[in-house]
Image 1: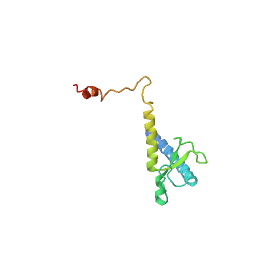
Image 2: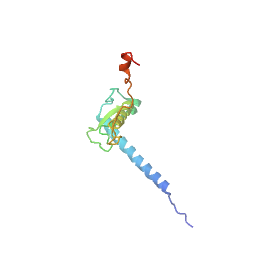
Image 3: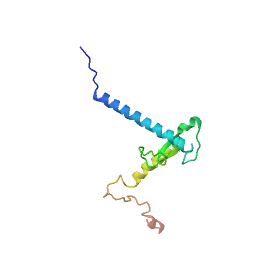
Image 4: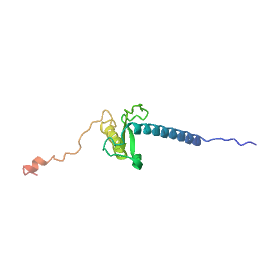
Length: 127
């Protein structure tokens, strides 16, 4: 009697996910190595210099936020320290939120509180 090697759906999806993650990591290392050869080892935002073991804290930021856009001249990359890179992505997320894209098109902004509503009567001595 032979034993068949069968994979469950979960096992197969785990295997596919592992392959995708390995490929993404391979691509990231490739453009990181290229960016480190092209650009000086300085954070483009704060100006901090990196070398030795600290070089791992210098990350590659895609200016257009498209990780597939990796031109050979490095024009879509800038090197940012971990902190500035995190800040850059936080700012873009906040901008998306503040531009109203999360609101319905027919929804209007309006104030619900008027903190100075009774000021005039108070200044005139009224109640």
